[in-house]
Image (tube, rainbow, N blue to C red; front, top):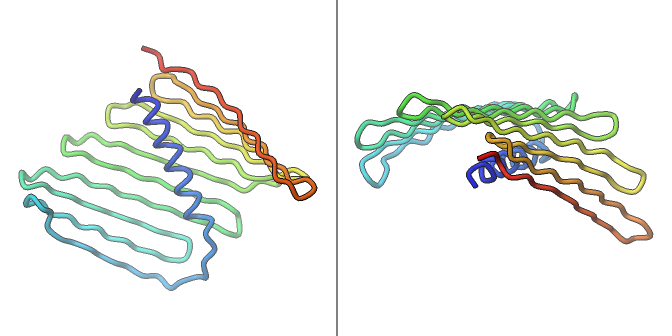
Length: 179
């Protein structure tokens, strides 16, 4: 069950990063922001965000009352001219173990390809791949996710508009993880 949740997180992360990357905005000047404070049980936190044209870097640190610290460093780069989006995140736990995530999405002549990978603090890796292709009447998308224990999920989506009617067909398969 954890594998399905992990693969789901990868899919949600990918969709969130793509959603953020595709929002059209006017170029903004570089800016920075720092937020710091105390948590409800004696802990502290700090989050630094730095933005410039096409780039966002976020660094966060949280320390509990016992002195245990968790850090998370994220980057996202959007190159509108090339049609690419890349993202990466690393979380370091108090034990020193790390969890990482990467995303790359590229515009193609016929649509877009996206790949993502997440590696948990114990070394398990989940992957996600998606290819979208424009058609004369809409688009198709094929997506596949594999969890750290070999469980898989696939989804094929076809969307078309004919005579003012939008038709969407979704098919998918799942295989459980290895015991």
